[in-house]
Image (tube, rainbow, N blue to C red; front, side, top):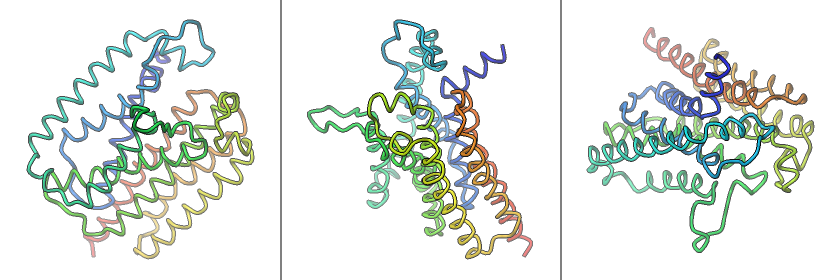
Length: 309
């Protein structure tokens, strides 16, 4: 029973929807701004689950697969199709309500907001090659090493830029610390990119067979860990410490924000051994939840210290 529940949560991508909401909450806490409306978070959750399930909602695999996730979708294809239909209805209803409720504010959103925001759904659409080939025949999912950076960019945009734009629309709130916002965006982009590279490592054999030149295929698993993941994480840690020093963060806040990087480094080295698909879905994706919780906790200490002084 427990195994079925775990498979349901992680294979059906509901955990990924939770991660999108958690990282968006982290943004609000770290920037010390109000939370978005419940409708916004519900729309974000439904859209994320629908988008991530899209790749598995096609024709049913005719025979048993050795991949547990592919097999789960084969056995539950009726549920997946119904779930996708309901999620699409929810997304449409929530987006329509949000548009009507905030139509005037959306219409008067500054141009530079639109310029930033439009690149995120565009990258997400091109990732699956959803535009008609007569317009553009580009599938970013097939671009090898660029794939992870695209995923990281979309995630950072959804959990950093979208909540801030939505806050401007809903409450007229503008972030007073653009440098902090850009740093958080860059940090999330790097963290989610590393996370995506680690995920590519589980598909090493399949990607090699179709000649998809991901980092793992180009460099091998061990070299990817030592020459890609470790340097990126070290740069992330150095930038964290530099920015924390510049902002005058306390030891507790710095330590809490370092935890996800250290955990990511430990998990990266564990990938030298072949791991199960659930390991990637629970542990590697779970690091994003750890990051969100640590970021929220660290920001609470920052704002509490500011009130005391």
